[in-house]
Image (cartoon, rainbow, N blue to C red; front, side):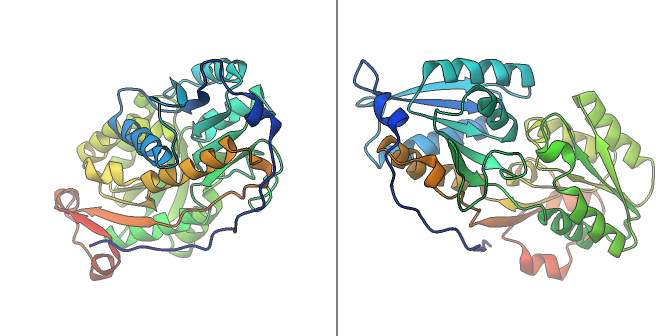
Amino acid sequence: MRRREFIKIFSGAAAVLLPTAVSAQQSNGKRRIGVLLAFEKSDPRPQAWLNTFTKELAKSGWTAERNLQLEIRWAGNDVGLMQKFASELAALKPDVILSFGTPVTAALQRETRTVPIVFAIVSDPVGEGFVASLAHPGGNITGFHNSEGTIGGKWFEFLAQIAPGLKRVSMIFNPDTAPGHGKYYMPDFEAAARSSKVIPTATAVHTVADLRAAIANLGKEPGAGFVAMADFFLLNNREQMIAAAAENRVPGIYPWREVTAAGGLLSYGPDLEDIVRRAAPYVNRILHGENPADLPVQVPTKFNLVINLKAAKALGLELPLILQQRADEVIE
């Protein structure tokens, strides 16, 4: 079963010509788009998202065969590589750069304040300093907001519903790649946990070994669970995270359907493919001369609660009626 949850989005703004975008026509007659991703090239999910983006852009007449040249860089979790590729792309002076994620958007901002940048899947664009406000970005960057900090409380609430008896819940993140270095989602998560008499903790990890050890430590105590922060390091290492949770019998909730589909217990978050799809019209508008400073940052319009029934049974958990009613999808 699927359900759509709509959130009000900001209205469009008037078109303003952007000299950088207009003058960056390539000598081969093609317009150039840089793409920087905080993913490994071998990961099928971002490959699919990039394919969705190019198909959507083709609807506006932009194709590699006719008038478009893509410069794609895959940085994975390597912060140093993100900065290297950001420098490379900025030096090319493309018409626009599409960035996937908070850390790569930050790297690009350090390299250029003139080349237009459209971000997708960024959690806190105002707090990170990418834009002055959602309604009026004010610089060379705009894009698509991933989720508000209040979702941290919802993650805890959903986890507590499927795993009653929780005594301690830890939010796991990598401070090098997480929004606000791990602080963005914490206040609402902590408030929700304390209101339920559950002890909230924060667990910072930097490597896969750290991640596995953190979950293993939780498994040593009865009544422990975890929340995976919306952090590209965790998404990129989802298989190891799922395996550690299963091995140590620790219930966890994730922001991404991809993790639940791969064997995680449950997830709640925005439809990332939809966000990427919606980024294409913004790129098209910039290619036609509009200024990112005047294009409001858009918020998610589709959220999904997904539950993996097999994972729940393996943990000895029943699927509560309230979650059955709320779930957009139950994977058996």
